[in-house]
Image (tube, rainbow, N blue to C red; front, side):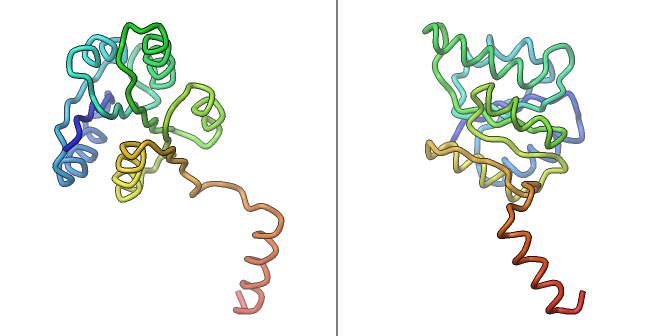
Length: 150
C-alpha cells in the first residue's frame, strides 16, 4: 500500500482520481493549493505525488521543481512525482522539471493506475498516446488504412 498525495483544485478531477486510486487500496491525501505541498510532503512523506498542471497560485510544474530542489538540498525526502498535463506542449517542461511521469489530459484512468505502479517500481512513465508518428510508423499505418479501404 502506497501513500499518495493528490494535488488539484478541481473537485471533479479529485473525485475521479480518488475513486480510481482508492480502488487500488492506496492511502490518499488531497490538497488544493500547490504552495501547501512542501509542508504536507515533509509531514506525510508520500510515496507518490500527483500534481495537476494548473493548481491555484502555484502550478504543478513549479511544485515539482520545488520538491526536487528541496530534496536535492537535503531538506525533504525524495519522492516520485507524476504530472497531469493540460496539453501535449507541456511535455518538454515536464521532462525538465524532473517529474517521474506524466499523463496528458483527458485522462485515461487505467493509464493513471499504470503510471502510479510504474513510478512506485522506480521507473519513468511517459504518456505516449499523443506522440506524433515517426516516419516508419506513419507509412505502416497509412498502408494499413489503404489496405483496409479506409
